[in-house]
Length: 545
Image 1 (spheres, rainbow, N blue to C red):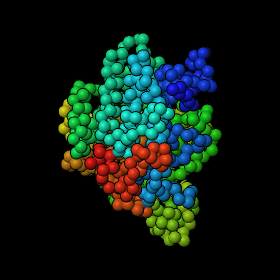
Image 2: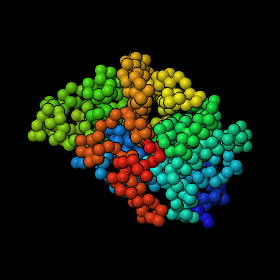
Image 3: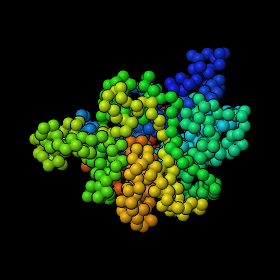
Image 4: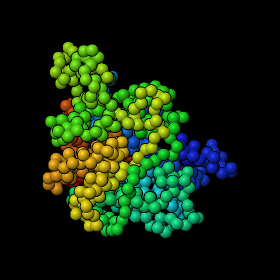
């Protein structure tokens, strides 16, 4: 069966000058597009679904996507009621349906299919196949962790099987771990062979450096092992032990895993997808109203980072807040344009009238304005469009801080071959402070939290597990919220308050299968209710039970 292949914009930019003269660029057959022309586009598409809005790129962001979901459900971002009538209400009240975030599922399957078409080339392009397998395992894990049982064995075949059966989640985990192990073997076998070199222009992550891809594969394997830390599933426990054995003597990433296929401000789809979704300005220079301005920092996030007495960080201020969020003017019924400059967030679920009362005024007070709140800072903020640099900034699949925290948790849980848990924990904090431009403050902060259970390296083993999740959350604020949320579901940390309008007693353990699946794959998709998303049952992803 002939398959026609549509390249993503950035992949097309990389490939346009390289397509064979005998190939019609307006009607490209799938098997004519070789891995060296596919990898950059597929890699960028994966990051776009994880960090941005998804594969459908409009002129501006829309506040959607996996990252935004995680930032909302870890109570990091809150809806901006000063500018919108009902922002982030579903994220707050938890009253979602099968259409909610369904593009995270459908778009990620498109991404994995693109990696699968690279894998189809086998040993003709072994190192490209290895890189595709690593990214397939990295991205597909998020779908399993958010949905449980999903199509896998019969998936990714496009029109040849548009209605794939569902596999058990633990079986998908096994197969994805197998992809990572296969990738390591391929690189060991073919990595040094110049005949199979990966071109710099094809690989927007490591520019063809296969030694670094091996380190990343090891780190992703470790992430799988840590995800499996508390499962009671016998196959999951056996898989965890298999991974730990396979990692004997392994090394892990020691630098952030960045991606940049040539991001620029030339078009919306050419921008760093994280910035496109949540940066202050669109590529045409107007305010990104439905992305950047849709949400503020949450009241919970800014209070935790400032050491508010009501939070577990009581008395310890974290200077990373200066990189993460902008300052606003304290709401004071907006006398003289507002009060003192500082970090102020909306409590999740509160309306403008609620916030007036929260701040000590009556519902008849003056409405809060956008100037009263903190918004995303760092690469997301610039005073003018001309000063913006986020459009061309690197994206990040994984940060060094994550690698260090994975190693800290593995050591703390007694995984064979891992040690020095506290050193890895403190290295993670230093890495995060360095990423946020605050390296000089790291040592003092580590000392300041050294006696604070669930924040620093103090207390019981459980307290230290909590501290690892807390530091991961801070390290990934604005960048990868869904990673923090999945670890919250896995461990119960960091402590995360529900929105004031929440209609459920806890955050959901999973999402509903998307409406598209019920329309197009009704014979196979499991039927479950929204209520079942909030309790542990047969539909709950196995890593959480």
